[in-house]
Length: 494
Image 1: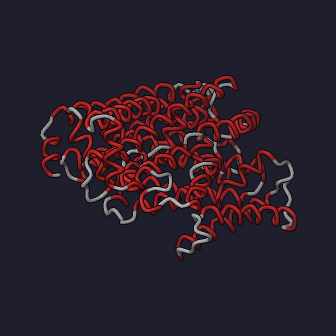
Image 2: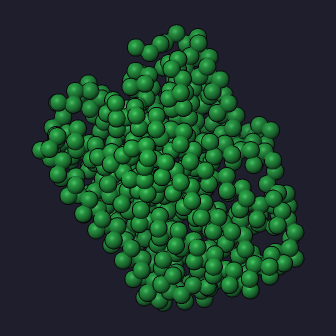
Image 3: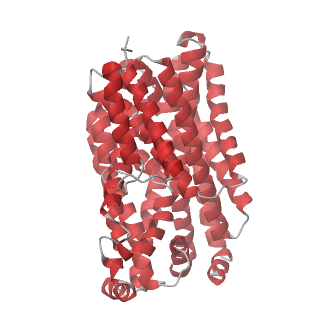
């Protein structure tokens, strides 16, 4: 393995591709800053907030699609997921395809209604929507705190994963990768706001798609064609070709759990919902649903299939997570190795930048303006709001950077825990708030408290309910709690 690493580390082309990619992201942030500064004096605070946090609600179909799917994908789509496919086989590829309708679900179910509500009321954030819908400051405060907490956990995992990948590919220190990574995301996000995030998402999505297709072609060619690779997999373990995975490791309860966790559960992810506030019109929304479904399907299918087929090409790796780095080191020329590394970094950066901008929007709009200024937009000066928005975005990035200096163990557990925690918090209040006129603040509060408590309790105690992931019983309990609270809680909307 060290020989492969040394071979890549000695290639200046790899460094050049990665650095050019990172510089391009920074350049986009500088360019997007012009649109942000144009809001000064042309609409005041409201115009600035809409530009900085929603790009003026002016996203096109392709931009909306790429922003949605790149935020959803992360390093696990390129490293962790293919690593599990290496160990379990084609069954894991089949399981991963559950995520393909992500854009269709998020944009199709929530997009139109959320956008209509947003344009009518001027809301900028998910928390602001909850306040407008339920009229409960306590609900907004609780969900905002939970969202930022879970966002920090996810961003921490992404920062560490990106820095470790940079370390593995370039041979530079973990700290060097972390610093470079943090500076790049921090600069283009704080300077350009949501517009820079979307523009970089477009480029990052294209890079991810190109890199994933390239690695799959390389694996099939190196293995002597698909039939030869499948024959070797069957010789290693027939279970690698089974829908239930090697050793029957993918039972039916897991299949069902994944349909909830990474399927319908995306309707409760604020980082996905936020994109529904920023597009132009319904025609572009339909295009985004099509583009997003095709792109995320290609990315997930090619990367995970490459991981599964990689077992037939390199069968003796000590850990599945090594398969993608090893494949790019063995099979790809230096410029493609750099491109693939940029693709993984893209997945990480798009997730982090979106969460930074949403967390910043929540603190400015839902804490400073809604609470401190009692919702009086006229009292907020444009200059202070601009500086505070940039400052909070940067401060959150610095906080995650500091936490990542001493990386904790069990990063995958932290990421999945935070993912499920967001769904436990937002799923029912968002969904029922949009589609049930009788939903009230009491039901929403009961749902959040019961859902988060159940999810944390089941996860911390490692309690299994019929072999299901904790998110399944959590959403069931949270839904029941919403109905009970809605009927008997005694707190109605104003």
